[in-house]
Image (cartoon, rainbow, N blue to C red):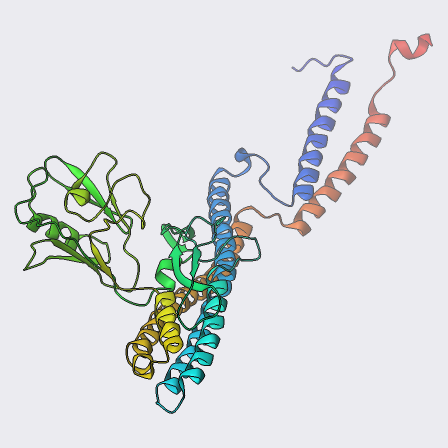
Length: 415
């Protein structure tokens, strides 16, 4: 037998009313948040899937933003390289025109004056800045101009002109992640883009009897190459050639020195480890205090110049009124400069095409992942609204019934 006290109907009614209000509040919160999972206990499996989906979506959206940023950077870089190619095309036209032998020395000097102006424009292009104020071709030293012009007097010119262009940037490449574990470069160092020939370095030190005195490292174009105690010049050559550095090494058969040559047109970037002396002992570096590329040993012979070196050589040939040199080494140097810049343009275009495919893949994958997340966590609005209206009607009915059913107590008569 269940014993009914005076307070039990009131307590039971309050319990059920509060339970219904709790359900109404939960339904209202789900409608406000447009999700059917407010707490993990609502659907543990779906909550786990939704958490994983949201993590993937967030990561892919960041990849998409990176791709958009890279495409903008590459477009700016490509435009400047194209401008450099157009300048070199005009310089080549002048070289072909001046090499036919029908122009007087004064005419050739006038052509040289135009080449000099084009050289200045080419230098401005190489020192260009993007919309954010960062230099385009200075590696990861984006606050500094990548190229510094040295001026002097040249025979045939009545004013000071550029006689040398030095690269003052770095070889560091900034990278951005465009997929899980996949990266693309955001910048292109100027000592690769504006380089014409494979560079060669011939030291004067005979390395035939050389041995590494302790374990150390050398750095070639940013690639770390470990050396071991007792390594001979043959072992050093093998380690360099087996590394990822775009450089091949060999021993000079006459002098016995260690010769380095790049496999693609760019400037050599050499360093010893902080406590090492291998490249200094081999006569390649002057010291370990000066930064590359100004740390080469003055006694070592270096060949292979930049695009600016080729243009300066051609201009000086024009100033001297020498059509044979203009049509010979001068024109050949411009052709090599054009080939190097066109190769850089192709590299930029290839990476741009990769970014296009990445952008298209992400544009399809992100909506698909959002659809999966929607299936796991989104609320059926029609069903939720219907449930809320039903709870409201039943709540009102319960309140009306409570007002009629609950009997007065002794306190009602003591008012």
